[in-house]
Amino acid sequence: MGVKLQTLTDPKKRAMLLSALYIAQEQFGWLSPEALERVAGRLGLSIGQVRSTASFYTMFRLEPKGRYHVQVCEGLSCYLAGGAEPIVDHLVRRLGIRPGETTKDGTFSLEIVQCLAACDLSPGMKINDELYGCLKLETIDALLDDLTQRAVER
Amino acid sequence: MKSDSLSTTSSFEPVLTRNIHRPGSEKIETYLGNGGYRAARRALERTPAEIIQLIKDSGLRGRGGAGFPAGVKWEFMPRDASQKYLAVNTDEGEPGTFKDREIVERDPHQVIEGALIAAYAVGAGRAFVYIRGEFFLGVKRWTKAIADAYEHGFLGKNILKSGFDLEMSVHRGAGAYICGEETAMLESLEGKPGNPRLKPPYPAQAGLFGLPTLVHNIETLACIPHIIERGPDWFAGIGTAQSKGPKIFSVSGHVNRPGNYELPLGVTLREIIYTHAGGVRDGRRLKAVIPGGASTPIMTAMQIDVPMAFETLRAAGSELGTGAVIVMDETTCMVEVARRLTRFFSHESCGRCVPCRIGSVRLYEALERVERGQGEIPDIDRILELAHGIGGITFCPMGTALVNPARSAIKCFRNEFEDHVRKGHCVVSRRAFRGGPDGKDSHRR
Ligand SMILES: Cc1cc2nc3c(=O)[nH]c(=O)nc-3n(C[C@H](O)[C@H](O)[C@H](O)COP(=O)(O)O)c2cc1C
Ligand code: FES
Image 1 (cartoon, rainbow over the protein chains, first blue to last red):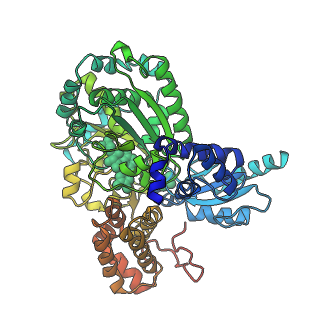
Image 2: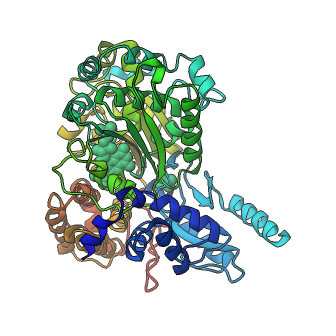
Image 3: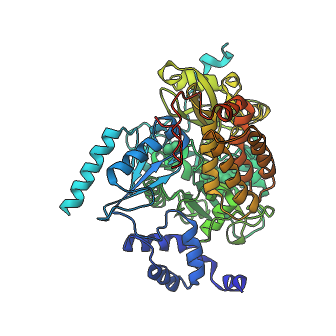
């Protein structure tokens, strides 16, 4: 049955799925069940097809995240450069959340990720689309202060 | 002990990275100003068969990890098929590797020109660029470069009045290491979860949407304009017997100057680390090196005179992989290195086949036990047995990648694993053991 359904959908339409999910995520901030349904409707795909793709890829958020999504690299090169856990620990203390969680006010969420292909700038992390390298705890603090300030001003 | 070539590579003239430090290096004007797209013009005046022969003569092998001869792969593409594709692999997820990111961000036209020549040679009318989802700047640079290439007539219909057409589009991945594997990438381009396909059929026979597809890493494509410009003999004159041409080595870890270094294949690790990357940090002693990205076996400091080439590294028990060199000094705990890398691979298993999905978790758990000082001596052989059971029997090459860190770390540094078990903590990092019921790591700085 599943196989049959798959052959019935236009393969080229399905090829638009990742882009469509990105667009929906940008629009709604995350991929709610309604957003997934909407994508499925637009592309003429089954909700199962959309969900199986959306859940396979880590960059698709199936739950809401903070305005600033902080991703700390725990890859080997970042670890060797003194990063990874010490940075995560610091952020856990500062933000009062654990990896995978979002602050109550919705400003920050924290996640541990793998090599960001920026090992020359180790230790590194990302905040939304921005890459930060050669990190020190003081620079992280300054960065967070700045973002908190900006969140308040909005 | 120094290698003979010590002085020869300090003066090596970079080719692939020659533009990246120029201001505005990503712009088409900069590229054209430095002779860009001249090779494409020349290539389009020759027959596809001639171009394939040039690439075969050059000895170019794939830079994405497997090292397959490019010209041979081009010949696999069926001549009679009316529709063929080119897939451009910019997924770069192998930990330690950051060369492709630098190429797309700083010199995307070099890759477009290489892709154009490759597409012409194999008769592909469409090129799909697959780029790692996290490369935000890369996506922007790719998109802009493609738009400019269309505007200048290097893409689109009747390119440079040759009668050859090529359409090119960018597709973002969304965070999955396995999508760098070529068949998983094709699945992803089709909008599906990135589960690798069984080979054969190979992509050249039945690839994207079932059509013949040539897949290349972007560093491989970047070599092509230079081979056309300077001739295959120039390329084949660089390197070793079976590994030709220049190669970008991403160097990271405990070195003074991490970064990308373009050097001839066959350069020694010693030279990369000490002549180019500024030596080991803080005057410490070198302990271990991963020569080709996280999935390639760890080597010891004793082995750094091995030339960085496909055949010589294999003979030394490792692989050239992506050429990403991760340097570790004497304070590095090798049990922790194996644990960390295995965790990565176990996270990134696509979950489709049992040995990879379940085996990687068992392997990780055993390594974690030993690392925390809670293991027993037989655990060490159990890790090797598990690794043996997974490597080589999985659906895709991920299984081999997955077991390499643990297997090679035990092979080279078994005493450290035994020390962890006997003493209940790590003696190398000389830090107090801080693991405990809350499961925190003992290796913090
Ligand atoms: C698990 C796995 C991950 C891979 N990741 C990448 C990658 O990120 N980029 C890449 O170019 N090749 C990657 N490859 C290799 C590709 O499958 C393929 O061999 C390559 O893109 C072919 O291009 P080349 O001949 O130019 O090297 C990976 C292979 C495996 C098994
Ligand atoms: S290990 Fe952190 S960016 Fe590569």
